[in-house]
Image (cartoon, rainbow, N blue to C red):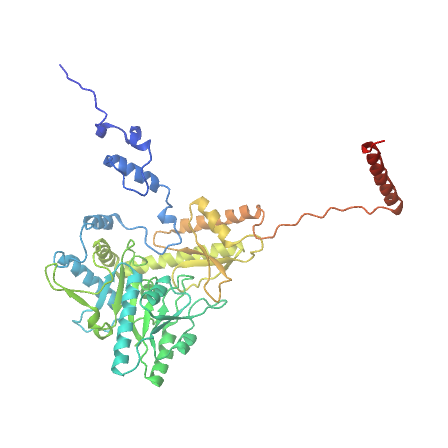
Length: 491
């Protein structure tokens, strides 16, 4: 005889999540719920809400990697529970980080001897790397000023107005005056001559951008180095250069190997690069490389032993995951120089396809340069009826996330749209984007303009009365007045 029993209401493991009570009532949003819920319900509730996010692959605003090979995804998940800072417990992970630092240092032509190891550190991104590089410059400048018996309380740093916000954070957080070279029409990067003119004895470094966030353009680091070399010889100041290669550091060595921007230039003392951009790793990894040990003051390096062994550390944070370091090593050995070169060439070619497609519409000015980060920045030729912000908004209806923004001072009157071409952005998608942009333009043409001021209503036209008509109207008014008095009066 087969025995059976009814399933109790509390036995939620056999229920469909969508048939349960957990999808009928809302969870508190800003307070921890009082009771537990089944894991299946928790997963389904979160997964459903995340469906409202944009598609990362179609997020053309971001430089950050949104696709990696499944084999690398497996390595990332296998190391998701490893704390990067526990070097004694995870010595192989530490070794992989050291290999990455040395590979990148050689890629940037660091002047290393045959058996000499590079000086560098893995970070959570270029923002942390820039903070560390800036601190090193500030401390070296302070030490030099102290030794000379000179004031050391007013350091400054020189950048273009096109720098990423992390430079403003560094200046504000660590009390360094930020001196910006303003932009101008048609020139949206730092002018090296103006930058060197702003250098004084309190300048801790000049920051050059290899791949502007605004239009992808490479600043002329070679010219900056030559002008700074001349000024340093005249003044004896020894003002160095930091290269912010967050976007361009993994592009220039493969597409423009003859371009001198790195440690081949004597005044370049440190370089940061984002592994999670064109280093082809998911968000959460950056690198800072110094020219040699003398450029990183020893007093900034901490030594700890409470994790099992003596460990040097120079970071702003402490604990962080190991996955991204392992993923970076995977990409470096998986692709090698040949693979990175092929990927960057593909990105550049697809950027040119998009640029040419936009030019054929006859509607846009191209603001970006052909040499630089593979992106296309463009603006409307005719803004009399609609602007770039409307295009950005309407493209979201097709799934595309294309940012619109204004340039920094003194070019803030210029508004642009920008499409970043990443590894996984194919030629087919580039052609489709052009098609959708044309469709958006046709739709905007059919809509009333948001930019034109509303037309005021026409004034009411009152015909002028003749003299006879005026007399008649006055007489009629008096008659009505007299009759009203008679009606209301007492006889």
